[in-house]
Length: 102
Image (cartoon, rainbow, N blue to C red):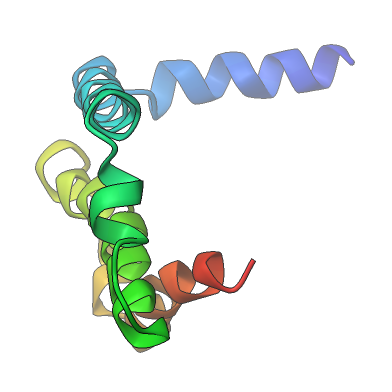
């Protein structure tokens, strides 16, 4: 158990970026506010008349915060070499589609 705490402490000292965390927290908080007070999901994501329009709505609802979090890493972290990997882009583009299937 002590090794786990040591690993977490090392992570916070070397990798944790408070400004990145706060921006992501603001992004998530804003999206939660928009969803619950302005019915973002009901009006835009699930408001389509066809299965394809619902898919595109949900895809964008999940893709925008997911991709934004990764793009913001370019501003806050030095080693973002995974952006040059093709599989990163495949996963980035396909992952939001899997959330629709649930």
